[in-house]
Image (cartoon, rainbow, N blue to C red; front, side):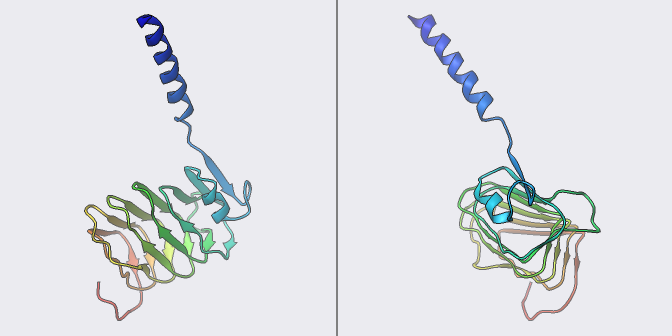
Length: 170
């Protein structure tokens, strides 16, 4: 009886480990017409082709949102983005241009939000102060056309260009 239980346990562990190990990706506009539709599909990664996207999608969970191509010459342009996290984890936004606001509301502790090789034509702002341990906001190799107004336990700006002037204190 014991060997049968062990055998079924091994089968169950094998099934669970193989079914949960696959990462999922959608490409906009190839697979879905909008970035928000791709995010709503709860995939691991959303890749965006170059072009103009007049939407302001809302990110509510850990995900990678990135340009499909590595070219820095023709970045996909998104109107803006709202990051309203509801689960702990990491979000990466990479090789994108934001023509309007980038708003972050991060009510979940221990989150990491990273912007990498992005262009923000407006400031990256935090809609509310973040007072959670290890809440981290990172901008790496970005160009920001206004001073960031970010509140987090850790704000890192590495190799970024920040243009313009604002009445906000940093």
